[in-house]
Length: 463
Ligand SMILES: Cc1ncc(COP(=O)(O)O)c(C=O)c1O
Image (cartoon, rainbow, N blue to C red; front, side, top):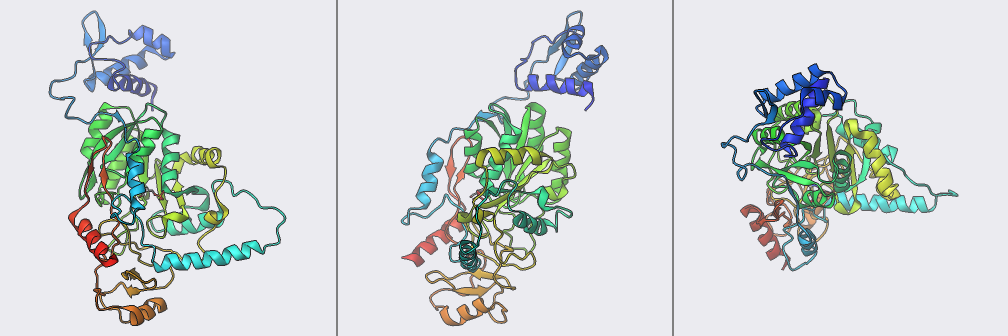
């Protein structure tokens, strides 16, 4: 940015955040150039720019003043930054998810009977036994950015949309939640404004609340996600430090930003030098076979901090998350180090049979989404549909014949019960767990009818 643009930006922020209010005089050209130690021409240019933007106006023989707000922009209709006040409500929702007598509407989890998960834990216990018998005199901290082999595998996993990504571009985190927290800590200070797609996961709002930030809700379309027009207006008006968005299968709406809109978003972000925190935790949930491209795939200047984890595709309990922090790598890595020092060793080791070329579908906790995860146990997609017994598995195709997955074949042959529809669609195969919709103001709405009916049906199966 040129000096006059920086000066204009400084004043713009003060005007938009109302530190300088309508009618307030601006410093004289001489005064501001002396105060900022810049040339008078730079100040004149900056004032001309702000005048073009109709933020300030010259008054004859009096200098420049902040323009009164036009009557056509009513304050109460445009989003306002505000403190998030969820208090203990979100903890209550999470707590309720553990109550077996309640449909867990507040938590989005993979089905615990997922074959990939069970296989993962079997391999993990093998690893633990091997680690116990290792003849090592000392244990050691696995410091950030985390276990190299895990990062290498993740980098491979990201290759299709992030060619050239290396292990050194990734920071391992304790789930996506820590990744989002570290991103916010890196980008904003208490009191700063963060634009957040609305509605969003309540954990995101809790982060914003805990860090003392102000949330500026940007409405999301139920199908296409973030409203770029509304974002543009907000960026015009407020000094936004970062945008937090969940573009692929938003929680709770399931909205997906079209790929064509992603370069637009980045163009807008570049215009306002806005970093984007992309919560991609549901990115692999797709009925279409291939996942939607993350915004990060279009990012050419490192402004996207992609946060993800295995929580929705394998198990939230293993707490394996990661971030691609782009140009913020050093800050994020340092903050990870000072906040948690290291990751648990078992958590930092790569899942034993990770293969970026194979896929397993697992049931998931969101309305109608199914995972195509690369943490696999077999070479053909499987969908967990069984209810009471573990290892009741069916191939993803409508017919169960012809699967090359031995577990699936055995399970289909031996445990399918006539009382359950074995040809359940991926949508029907989802576990009852769905999310409630919580906004920054704390209102909750019920999830979709489909999700509710699946939940109720599953409850009947359980009883
Ligand atoms: C949108 C979103 N982001 C992040 C998280 C937290 O993910 P993790 O378990 O990896 O911390 C959740 C959990 O439900 C979520 O819905």
